[in-house]
Image (cartoon, rainbow, N blue to C red):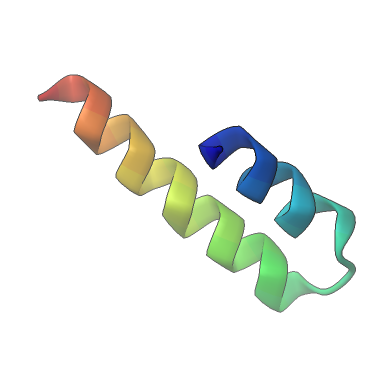
Length: 34
């Protein structure tokens, strides 16, 4: 589910979406580090 959302964001053009993706990725990495 999460990876599907990531792919959707990546497929959409625009730096705004890229920054959202980077934020989600950072949050995901923090969760995995717990």
